[in-house]
Amino acid sequence: MKALEGVRILDFTHVQSGPTCTQLLAWFGADVIKVERPGVGDATRKQLVDVPGADSLYFTMLNHNKRSLTLNTKTPEGKGVLERLIRECDVLVENFAPGALDRMGFGWERVQELNPCMIMASVKGFGPGPYEDCKVYENVAQCAGGSASTTGFLDGPPLVTGAQIGDSGTGLHLALGIVTALYHREKSGRGQRILAPMQDGVLNLCRVKLRDQQRLAAGPLKEYSQYGENIPFGDATPRSGNDSGGGQPGRILKCKGWEEDPNAYTYFITQAAVWQKICDVIGKLEWKEDPDFTTPDARLPRLNEVFDAIEQWTMTKTKFEVMEICNPLDIPVGPILSMKELAEEPSLRETGTIVEVDHPERGKYLTVGCPVKLSDSPVDVARSPLLGEHTEEVLALLGYSEAEVASMREAGVI
Ligand code: CAO
Image (tube, rainbow, N blue to C red; front, side, top):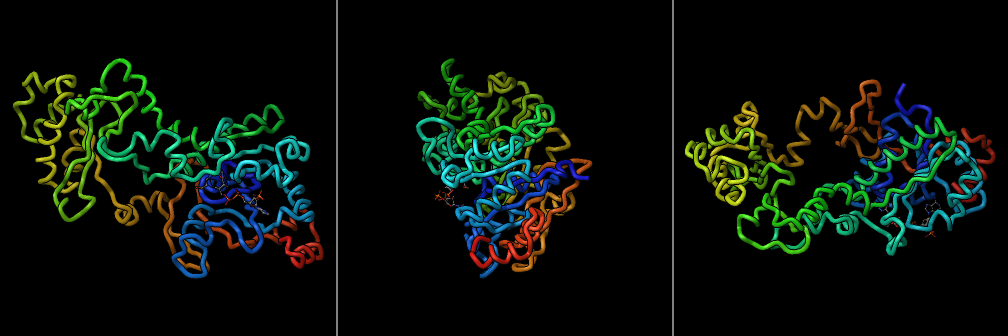
């Protein structure tokens, strides 16, 4: 039995943030019924298409292990089906634009009337406040949540990151809220409303930058490269390139082959505890006794000199050789792995972190598996549903007769 077996989710999500959440719940064993507009479905089905006629990777990679029900929820019959679904389900998850569910006639009050045990979980761009009515996509959230202003190099513009912290990040936050509310419902017998604003999710993930904002009042941020470069700090947390975000200075350094290979780099952390070993490895034995370098504080104004010397050494090794030499010495390093290298990495296939899935329209493709491993709830990644693939099955579950289903199909309700 899977951890969330018996939990039924009415999945009204689309694009990325909401589907990330419901896919995770499906992986943990919940029965996720995705409601989509007849003939259209989730917009991502037909976005960034690589195999003509087939559901896109964008859609398939976010909607595994779900069932798909097509339903026009703006028709009276469609609303009737939705009411039955709300009565039958434990959780309603949605990430429509602000107000869309109210306009459909299924705001929180109505949902509670239909099912007081219902947990209703929403992703929105912003929480209550000046921007609460805005539509929001990933990069807007990264910008509004503090990530963009603190990402990139000091002399360049703000940057968005490749990690989808606004969408997938908020989906993860929402999933935690849902599981927490399910646990609470066991004791209280009542559902509750959950809101996960994307701005809040991004800011939560950027908390170290809010930490640094407050530390600025006490003086320059000495672990930032700009301190050693004598560049004055302004009044907001600056962009810090590839500087480590913590108390142990680190940088991305070139490795052998960097001239040809854009990913021939390593991340190298000069953890204080292994400083002597770092000096041995890079052949800077004199730094072991030199008061300008022996302590972490002494090194802070000299980080460029330190990392230049380490880079002279890393440039003589491949990123994997750096790993092989440093790991046994407990020197924290990490190769910059390309998506190609990750896709081909056998150990990630073995753990189910990357899985190959077969799909009737597009054939075999790779996707990420569940990033959280539960010992008693192994995850089998099943392909995403075709549009409306489970409509009849779900309507039968709700008690509709074959004749009623046929009539709804005729009328374009499903
Ligand atoms: N039957 C009938 N109508 C349906 C339906 C169904 N099964 N499913 C959705 N609809 C309707 C909605 O009710 C809404 O109608 P109204 O505008 O008339 O009320 C309409 O479809 C469009 O919904 P939407 O406004 O959410 O969709 P959009 O493509 O215009 O906006 C997005 C997309 C993502 C910007 C917006 O949904 C949003 O801001 N969501 C919250 C934040 C979020 O999750 N963003 C992350 C997205 S991933 O980057």
